Length: 182
Image (cartoon, rainbow, N blue to C red; front, side, top):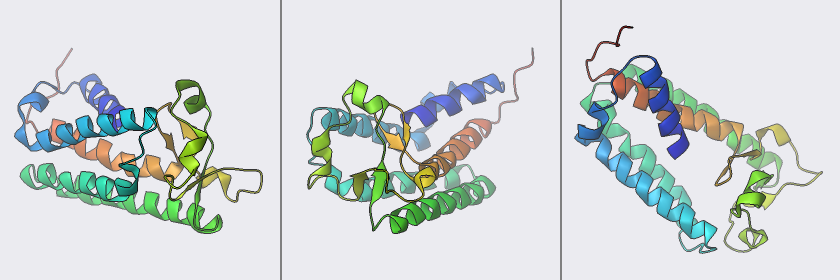
């Protein structure tokens, strides 16, 4: 989700909001710490260490729970509800793809083959729910095919990441700074 955080921050800056308060806002520190942990996990996958993959679902759930802190502290209830609708939509789309493909989420690695993130060994006992997509894959449009080099995302995953973008943007906006005028 690092890319989502960076792009949202750039968007907020482009909209004229100050970014500096992000660095002193304690309610975002747990998210930043988690992102550092996420980078650690990605490095482990690049090094073919899949020890943590078996806990991926719990780790992602914990990450989403960390957003409760800025939502409550900054009273971002409306963005929280809207973002939650995005999570539900994304989860629903992912569940449809998984159900249509026998309980597995097909992936289509492209750029990850070049970066070294994709490794055929990933589909041994470590992969869990993911399988390599084939010509017989159903609902390919809902499967993981958006390859960013260190992760392969589905449309459902993009909806889930929209929650992150919404909460971060409204957190930045809540610093009570007026947009800079040019």
